[in-house]
Every structure is written in C-alpha cells, then in structure tokens.
Length: 62
Image (cartoon, rainbow, N blue to C red; front, side, top):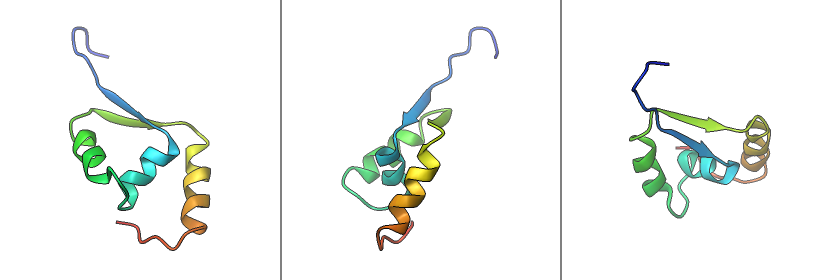
C-alpha cells in the first residue's frame, strides 16, 4: 500500500452484489457508486449465495 493514499473499498452483501448483476430496485444507484470506488469486496460465501439466487430465479444477467 502506498503511504498517504486512501483506497475506497465497497463491501457488498449478496443482495447488493445481485443489484450489480441484475436490474432490481436501486441497481442503477449502486452501479454509479461502484464506479467511484477502488475495489468491490464480498464475503467468501457470497459466490455460493449469488449462484443459488441466480439458479432459483429466471432473472436475466446484465
């Protein structure tokens, strides 16, 4: 890490991550916020939860 440089990391729960992948309420706002951060972080279980959500719904991924 560079001294004196601040990084902004957006932590997303599964429901927030889904808003980035599919059109839901507040998806556009979250997409706009995500363009202003240095990184997006998720918990390790988020991948499994997101896949279960996608498999359980007929949503179209953006």
